[in-house]
Amino acid sequence: MIIRWETDHDYVLVHVHQDMFGDWIFSRAWGQIGTQFGGLKHRLADDHDQAMMWLADETTILSSRGFRKVLEVEDESQQGREAVTQLSLLEP
Image (cartoon, rainbow, N blue to C red; front, side, top):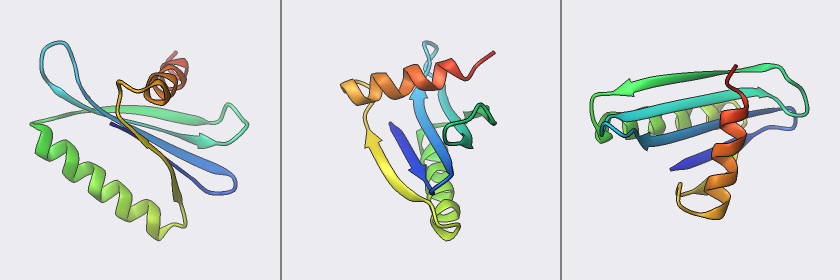
């Protein structure tokens, strides 16, 4: 699952997925739209439920800060693949 939130200047992209070992990964990228400023962090969840709890927390926090959801797709969709490509470009 890939979800992107934006304000007029900033974005947050969350990717919740399983790796090849079956572990659940919660990846969060953030930054300023149109710039190279931002970051990327990966967290290993104990299970799918914990990753979904982190996603619910993220949604609550971002909504309270004025972010609006602009994308919510599954990894297998074309939009999902494009979002993952953007996420991988952030890694050094």
